[in-house]
Amino acid sequence: DAKTTQPTSMDCAEGRAANLPCNHSTISGNEYVYWYRQIHSQGPQYIIHGLKNNETNEMASLIITEDRKSSTLILPHATLRDTAVYYCILGSGNTGKLIFGQGTTLQVKP
Amino acid sequence: GAVVSQHPSWVICKSGTSVKIECRSLDFQATTMFWYRQFPKQSLMLMATSNEGSKATYEQGVEKDKFLINHASLTLSTLTVTSAHPEDSSFYICSAYSGAGVRGAQYFGPGTRLLVL
Image 1 (tube, one colour):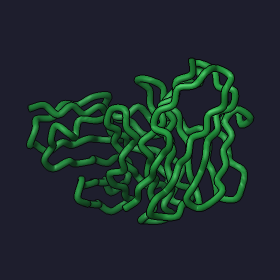
Image 2: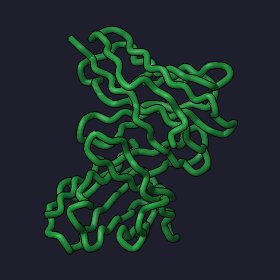
Image 3: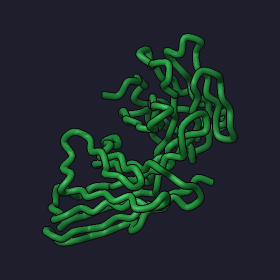
């Protein structure tokens, strides 16, 4: 069973920041928080991951709470092409194994 | 960087035949590759973990004799669906793991859509 909880769906206006929450209250010390997205009929795309510090790359920012029980993925300026299913997943840093949950369907609207 | 390819992208076959799907990491070496299956409107389901040079580890409920996995090199893993039946029709996706630690992540291929008639 997936160990994260995400809202089923969210809407965001084009050009605005999209903030996608994820709860992972049972996260263990060596588990990373990974974010992937899947655009229809494609393989998942890696976005970002982190252990305890906030992370930023060219795609997004990842904010992890100090107790590590929740996190937020931020897409700073959402575009229509960001419409996808976003998965928040806890993964072992050693084995790389990921168990996908149902994710959040983000719909970016004009 | 971190590109993973799959071949073929589409395959249609008759019931009872075997189908081989290749997964390649193009710009990095992957000691571990993973195979997933995805049915329409569902999430990805992990089928097996493939380690280079050793036998694959299958998730509970996945038939190892039906889904043969070979990880012959650090850049290539293959999944063979043996004696395919219509219920095996699905979207098969592989991923390659770039390594442990801060920089480690799974990178996914584009997927292979299998239709068994």
